[in-house]
Image 1 (tube, rainbow, N blue to C red):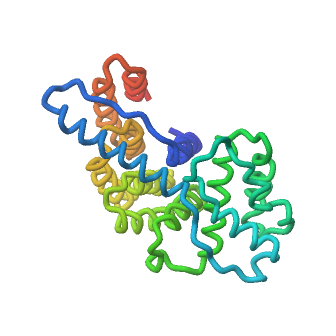
Image 2 (tube, helix red, strand yellow):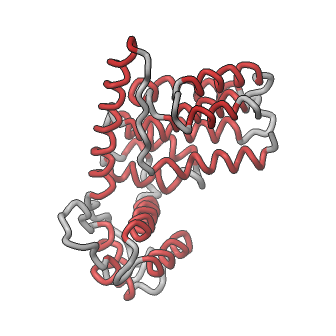
Length: 279
């Protein structure tokens, strides 16, 4: 498979890192308990991630060299906005945070700033505005903590933001943030999954695919993630990709795809995974 196709496929998986996923139940009687436990882990993870994404961020000091007084006020408002509060209707986040008063932003934030202003406002589509807010806030957190080492960060919300902000532009940093997040939240599946997706990108970015250390690190990440999210189809898909793109590994990839298709009888995922065997 061409490197361009690899990058596209990996990009699809990376973009799915912040989405909620469907849960699959096994049909084997002997594995029902394990399947139920895995589903419980995933449900708990969804609740935890919802809190981490929606909770307000603690203020981070910014200097006048990083932004104007109006922008610093807006950034504090944006990062401090509490989405966990019960709302009768979706709030006008753009007006509440006074984003219009911030007209000059650093280059790393400009595109996301403009997208936020365009997407959010009165009568905004709530899902599109939330995505714009999450991405802008993540990039803002990453920008304001750019001089901190990952080891110095102890706030899970900051680490969640850094994982999201760097998952495509700096996967190595994203992996480090996800690993630190796993130390702080050992049962948080999303942190494990982010490591898998980052490791997958790192292993496949070499067109020859011969980096054994990268493949080994990916295998360990998959193994660790399976302990919490064994029934997540996206994790299985990442595992299939890891088999498919390894050099001289086509037969094993085909066998893995066939086995995966049999795990989802009567679902659309069955034929989908079966098609992987035809790559």
